Length: 70
Image 1 (cartoon, rainbow, N blue to C red):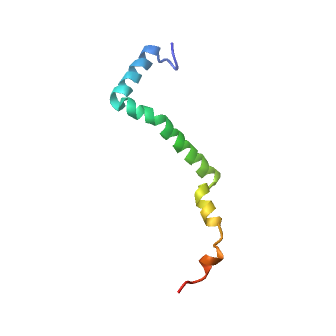
Image 2: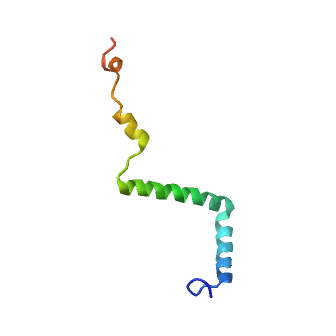
Image 3: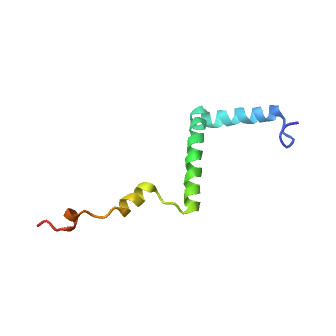
């Protein structure tokens, strides 16, 4: 007996079918893509904004930028 009544052989057959359907390149990219999606979801749930976006918005304008050059 394996996990929840699924034997090891059945898991291997399912794994072989998934590899045949998606290929190894897509499966290789699945981990980093899934990690990035989870990080983005956690940031969204915590209400954090992108650090580069907030840094640009928080910087005050220089005095030279405030004057009009005509």
